Amino acid sequence: MGLFSKDISTFDDLFLHQLQDIYYAENQITKALPKMIEKATAQDLRQGFERHLSETETQITRLERVFDLLGEKAKAVTCPAIDGIIKEANEVAGEISDKDVLDAGLIAAAQAVEHYEIARYGTLIAWAKQLDRTEIASILQETLDEEYATDDKLTRMATSKINAKADAVPA
Image (cartoon, rainbow, N blue to C red; front, side, top):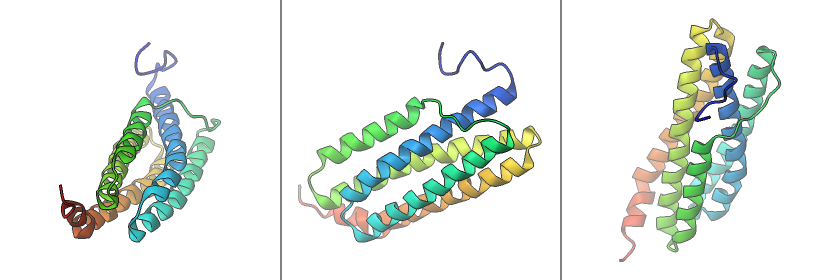
């Protein structure tokens, strides 16, 4: 059928489908983060991943609230994009032996996830506003703000020390 289900015929249907997509993505992220926590060697990176795992669990609860507001059951639809991002992260992490280079790779993988989430939540907020669902837009905005903050923290961590340590690894 392609990217979307044949059950999508209205803007409301499309909105619901994208909610189900990000719900799936967030749940997959909660499964991937413990592996990233385990692999991270920099203490601040590990702690950042631990905080984000807790934050992601809260984001899932928010999404369930959004489903309730829509009168829908919280349901996930498979998201090949997040599956691919997570698969790539696992493959890259499995191929890196140096701990400093691994940490830089983990940050890159985490930022790919964050950028995907930022794109999805930004779209959902715009659609919620278009559909006059201001309460839902506000709930989703909380999560979008957290995703931007996480991305900023990862960038600061990478550029302040982790990338430099990875670059210092002899060839």
